[in-house]
Image (cartoon, rainbow, N blue to C red; front, side, top):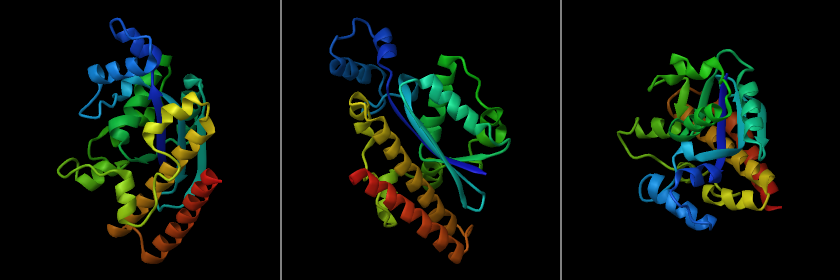
Length: 238
């Protein structure tokens, strides 16, 4: 089994205030300062340690690509969400994970936040099959397409455009904080679900391109996944 997943997060405001010396009262100014001090690269995007999880969505699939079950959570109680994720990942003794930039963000975030809340992660996540840099059980699309950094890291939206799959129709990552402030937690989960389906579709294309899926099987799985992706996007637009 494989777990195709994505996590949505927002900056951990109380934690950042604790770290900054004389943080500004204004939240926007405080986040700008935090980005300057702790952010990465030109974007100033905060590393995973400085984020809190507000939603996750996962899709269990078989090794041959057949979808089995969608599971999800959203909320303000991060510990509750982590417990739900740990319970989900404990459903199987052996499984792989599929994601986009999960090695760089989602998986470290899970570890940091589990430490914060005093939780134990499933043993599988620390197994060699998962932790090994070139593991076939921990598939990061950014690694797969960039040949582990030898080439440039592609954006999910751009890979989707390349193969004719509309991605990011229900939102963008930089909109999640505003959604959260407005109490639009269901919308955040919906956006997260869209990214999971897009990741799954791109993985199917990669499997087919690499001769891991036969044409008839690929077309069947692709058609069903595209229908689900369109359904998700239509629900978001009313």
